[in-house]
Image (tube, rainbow, N blue to C red):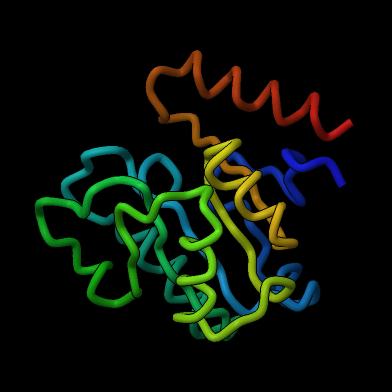
Length: 158
């Protein structure tokens, strides 16, 4: 398996099928924060995001953790109180992923990494044998970077 090849590509987290992840044996998800589940510097968590996250925790019995290289948000997001979070994690270092696995209580092959970073998320998760989902939302700025990332991931999938 190519190290940068994602297991799945989605334009947003809302396209991710929880039933398919459950069938694949996924019991835990490592989520990237900036430009994956939250717009960078967003002031609040949307209701649709809260609903999506609660569905994965309750409907699919999939545990969630936020693992981000960014600093913790200045304003307290209620989301961080509901889901464990590791900020300034140092992805793609293995230590960041192993810390998340310890908190989730899952094994590598039972864990998915969802993020928009080709190196930090895809390479970091793939080299540990995790299921990886590349997400490049249309609202990422600048849009050119998002287009280039999607193109690179599509080329690598061949």
